[in-house]
Amino acid sequence: MEQGLTYYQPQELSTRHKHIIALHAAGMRNKDIAKLMGYEPSTVSIILNDPRAAKLTARMAEEFIEELTTTTQDRIAASALEAFETMLQLLRNGENDRVKFTAAKDLLDRAGFKPSEQTVQTKITVTRGDLARLITALEESKKEPEALEMIQDSSGVFRQDDGTTSARK
Image (tube, rainbow, N blue to C red; front, side, top):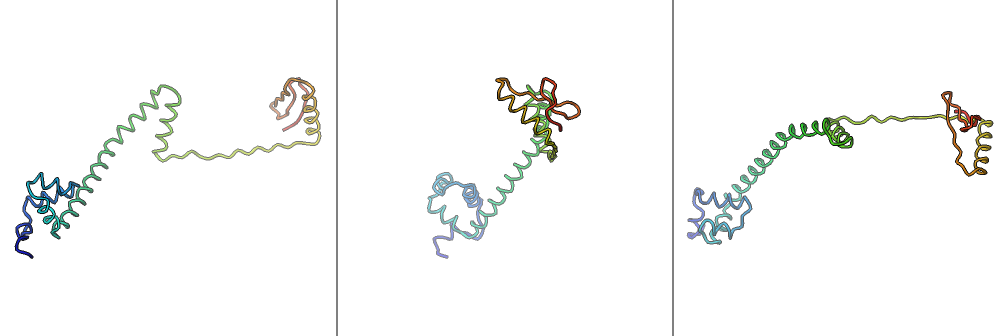
């Protein structure tokens, strides 16, 4: 090691050197660190180029990230209960049905419930006679300006509004 560098790279890093390294790990520029610590920018560069400084910078950055991550996770966990209570309030006292519905849906979604998918199948059997009556009714509706209205009774039979049977379910 050159004689002039021993002051800046001593056997043990001083507290001031560690402060410079910490400021660098926090993202501060060398020029700003030098001004703050009362050093020349070249002196700060020499200190930061020490292999021990690189290791210390990496360790400080890891600790900072770990602390930041832990703090963020703690803040999220602490806010989760408050967020849950807010959703419950919206569900119970929402201004309208849409707000209540959205709150209920979000609560169920976050709890892991998924809506069940249901398939509804309907089978309609049409006989030739039913088809003939339907065609006749459609042709008659073309002649009349009013719309053809069909209703289905409890037995599944379709009929025109006037009571004549047109088709069966």
